[in-house]
View 1 (cartoon, rainbow, N blue to C red):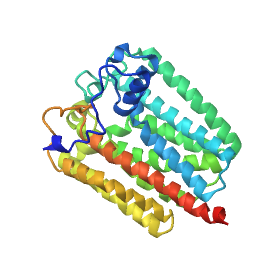
View 2: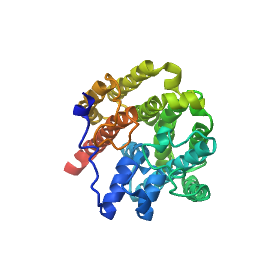
View 3: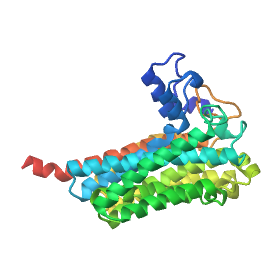
View 4: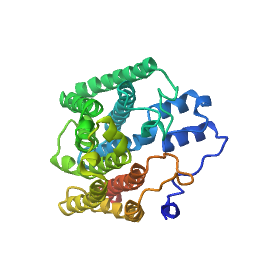
Length: 352
């Protein structure tokens, strides 16, 4: 039954022969490309750094930038700070993915039969690169982050360093031990919510605004939902590896109920923020993502298929893909709502 409601438009079967841009697009969308070992350098590294999940980091950064435009003067200088901050976030996310793969492989968590090595070609197990090159890539990205951090701290003060270091520590802590003690999901909420969104806002404006902290929570929550879905998919493997993720602790049925609850809480938070005037009316455009949520809700209420559905690119992952399916729509609409609010805020001055 689930096969009939798959988002086929979101997961098309890639053709055998793709253009260069086509390979990059598939790598960004699906974490893999056909014939990856013969692929170009950029396609391989898009797969290695798992660029397919960067949309969440990009969304958090854009939300922070748009909140800066809503609450603060925003000119060309601020746009430059925003681009630097978002570049730093993406580099940090890529670094975390590289280090995560390196550590989990060294610890024996990532194996050929572990989901990480099945839904996409693993950088090390699949022979895409070597451990030394993986670490070199992480060091280069960390140095880039360090330079960006120092510049933005020089412009706006040492709190930029605090946000950056806290994000680094929590991300490395997730890889090292937090995910083993049912704290990975909470970490995701904090990192992709307050740290990324409020941190971006501060890096642009040099100010802290309590409204921005509250406005960071809805999207941070549905990033946490993606991690809940991922850990549901890996429950049995994580249990055998001694990783006590939240779904391992709760059990599958309660974990799925928690996943559904995050979607409902996302909308409750959005409505409360609008009613309290924290964000403008147009953020309610996120209700248009309810058509995806209806599909996701139905899928979550059904058993996971026993075999890979047609055109499903990230098998054996299932729940995480559906969580991401809602996340992308809700995140894009949240951004659109913030843009509409800014336009509505400045429209009277343009009319005059």
